[in-house]
Image 1 (cartoon, protein in one colour):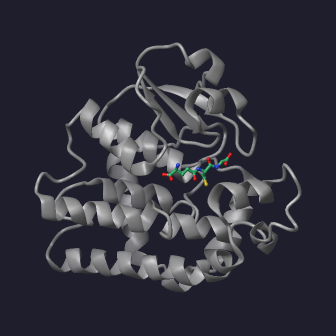
Image 2 (image 1 turned 180 degrees about the vertical axis):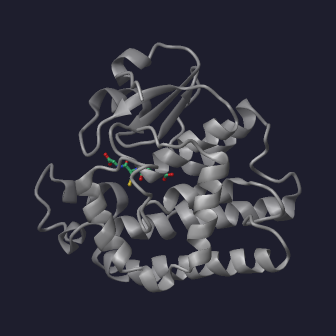
Image 3 (image 1 turned 135 degrees about the vertical axis):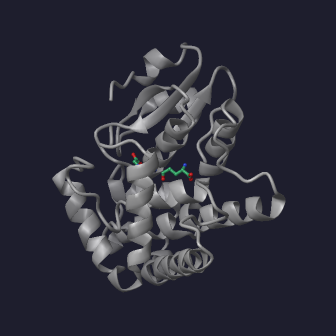
Length: 257
Ligand SMILES: N[C@@H](CCC(=O)N[C@@H](CS)C(=O)NCC(=O)O)C(=O)O
């Protein structure tokens, strides 16, 4: 992916999407996928993992990624805000049902996958050492400190993360089984929604993509495998069958980061 540095992208028109460079950051993979499915072009802006990203921060107010900036509108960094922007820029195909009940279901499932307290939130805390939770041991400027300050990695959250992440996985698998029983291969209704895309992209840490699908750097494969090993029992095969089908049918392969 040909990233533009934040200082050079700031004055460009159109959609700029800050994404982590050289790393398949699941939140970024999800944002890129929303725009890909809707055929919306964007200028990829480099976010450098674990770095201060001063230019990006000065421009958008955010150090991490993804951040979507449409013309001179406020920067959008949350998964729901980025989804709503994608829906607005190209309503076709819709990734949210028009009817309120299934729409609320899609939002609820996405929140369980991406939101605070959800699967990705908890699995992030499982990727790093216990010290990440202990602010007295975090050295200034260290990755641990970034995690603690940015995501509120308290001791209690880190300790409970495996159980909480597993309970989301069990919920997601239950939903897919219920849908399968009624003849659907999607989380909600009978067609692709944001919930399918968010699960596909957020699952890449707990069950890694093959190298021909993603040239994930070795250090990250290592971190992800120790995290994934703690969740094997909760990883019903239906979750991975769904993920692989969504990737191979709708998303961009090989991953481009
Ligand atoms: N803002 C996103 C979360 C984004 C996020 O968590 N990004 C992390 C991925 S774990 C990141 O950018 N990590 C690299 C870094 O912090 O430099 C949301 O809440 O929807």
